[in-house]
Length: 145
Image 1: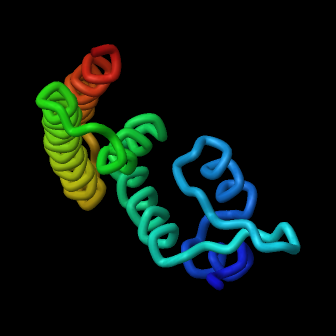
Image 2: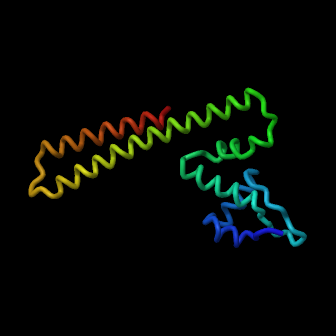
Image 3: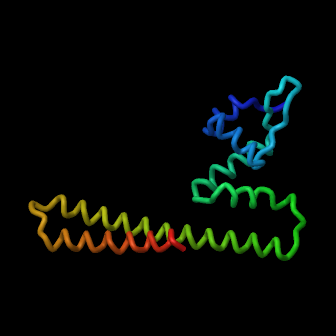
């Protein structure tokens, strides 16, 4: 028949409330048994794994639903173009995020090296402050786009 919600929560790490919410949004559609229990099949479990990966990559639930339901839609050129646009935009976001994370790692490395020196001079602190300001501006600008 499939897996009950408790088994799915253990396997996926999603809470039961989250699974019910995804069902309400029609992102997953578990079958209902005669007893009213939800039963998740392999396709549902795979969809939940997609959701976990895409959420980690900062996709919205609307974007995830669009991706997961694409095979069910009429596949027109406009549909493919929308799909390509979504994926390209996310690739750009992820690449910018990677760039910012690398810069933050550099900042932390610099902070570590300063923490090893006997005294932190004002010039070092100001250099770190300016670096943080630039990273913040890049992050804020990206969020506002």
